[in-house]
Amino acid sequence: MECFLSCPRGLEDITAETIKPFCSKVLPGRGGVEFWGDLRSLYSVNLHSKTGMHALVKILNVQAKNNDELYNEVYNYPWHEWITPVDTIFIRSRVRSRYFDNPQYASLKVKDALVDRIRKKTGNRPDVDKANPRYSLFLFIFENKVSIYLNSSGNSLSKRGYREKIHKASLNEALAAGIILLSGWKPGQPLYDPMCGSGTFLIEAAMMCRNIPAGYYRKGFAFQKWHYFNNRLWNQIVTEARENILHKRFPISGYDNISANIKLSMQNSRRILIHNYVKFKKADFSDFHPEEPGIIIINPPYGERLGENNELENLYKLMGDVLKTYCQDSDAFILSGNLELAKHIGLKPENKIPLKNGKIDCRLLHFPIRHGKYAE
Image (tube, rainbow, N blue to C red; front, side, top):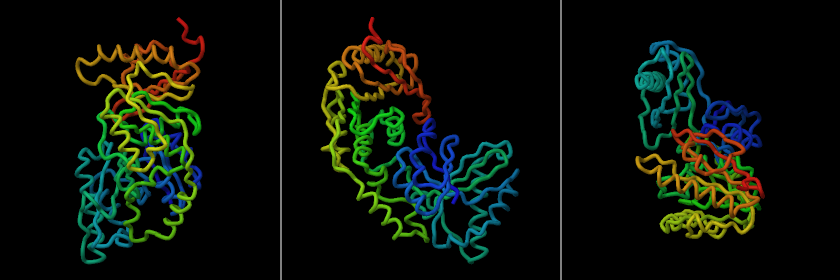
């Protein structure tokens, strides 16, 4: 099978590296990773990928320069061989083409071609179900190149199952996991988040420490609804994963100056029974004094609302002061969506890694805090 695993922009290489053990071939691209393998590969990528969003199976790859050509190319594919009239479908589309100036109409033509083919061969047609289709399809059109993929994941793989309420500044879980991996942190090394919000960084790290697959607590995947789902193979994969889960405790600590955030973090960690593996504590950032050197990861506010910047300038200056004074021999990673504010940290980053947090262009700033490096 030829497949594509989408991921947050900037995490393509790390995503490719983490799914290599499950695939016969991987190739990082823009916004994701192409991978090849069998059913075991597809199931394993869905279960284990820490940074992926949707694992898509390539169904069709054709060329078309107008809606009639698009309809005919899609109609010629034997959809009836695996989609029945009693099934439900839904098609999402992403179109960037001079030939198709109405993406919604192009998506409609693909849907019509698909159901017309099934009706022609069976006498009936499947219905559309946006909420819970058996088969969810992705349509991609770039200029005259048309690709249709089958979504094997269903909801984004970033939805692990431990967050019900979302903190207003929360990162999605896939991006948080990617930032941890980019930091070079290893299980056993102290990890700190002094602005932990809903605890996403820390819970992701605790799952990594215990070798818990990223999708282990999800309610399900789209491929489990397919007609040709191999339940025996899936159970083997899950059993193997379960047998490799560790029960060691590691130094993972989170702090926040808002009690509601600490409560939310603890609720999220308790939902997947990982609360005994992470320490949460209410504390002001000015009181952040790590017990021993380690990796510090921070996702501070970006100042998106009018009038916030003056207050945030002081917060960013405080971050720099605390890091210089109390965090010697640690490595700090700060995700910044506002490089003007980041200048107030007062430290020169050794590296700036481009990332996308949703639609926000960000940089992951690496500050190695070494004795004398930032002496005034």
